[in-house]
Image 1 (cartoon, rainbow, N blue to C red):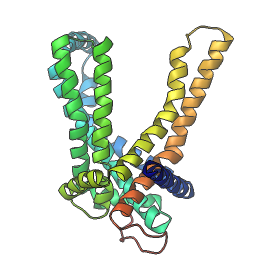
Image 2 (cartoon, rainbow, N blue to C red):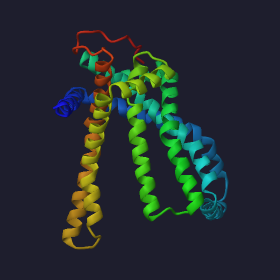
Image 3 (tube, rainbow, N blue to C red):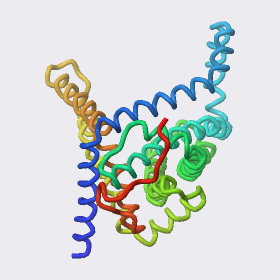
Length: 303
């Protein structure tokens, strides 16, 4: 009976998130495009010196360098992992910072019933340090241990990693991502509610422990929705044998169409619904949830 009540609560959280996302779809769409553009510009500027330097070197040099790099990668997975993390962690941190700013829009949608695309830029500018700090913590805790474990196994067993070892590591990565993702699910809602990085992280872990059913229930629901959106395409794509028959081409056409629709559904609706649902649960478990339009959200300067 208790499990059924918790399931109904998760469904209600997702339903409310979906409803608010539908009424603010244009705002979230424009904000997402804008945040993607900001990320692209920052990354492009950061890598501009390397691109300029690459253009000054002759193509034969890069051909030889590429061949030597592949051989080096096969024999030095540990160093490659370190170098990869040095590049990947800042990029992941930037992506998560941009995502965190959209949680500010989720807060406004939950508390006021509506939001505007400009708000994402305001949250990004005015809470950048806190959002970036929280994003860095999440990136390090969620992704770095996985990379180190994969690198350690590669050092022992060699590369490429295949068979049972690869399957075991994939399961480990999924479990670690699910567990740590649930623990940090409430970090960004805490940041947009005025908490500092340390306080938001500690508070998120505490809420995940004390409100386990509510927090991990929502997190599980989001993962299930994501799995439902990608599994049909993956299963059909795995079973279908690539041939030139009309039937096979039709199957692959269906797979492609499904994947396009799934990506569109997440981009336009499910991803903002997920953010709103997370903020809604945060407000509920911290006593901050209010009826839409009955409480004014904190003023954030609009860019």
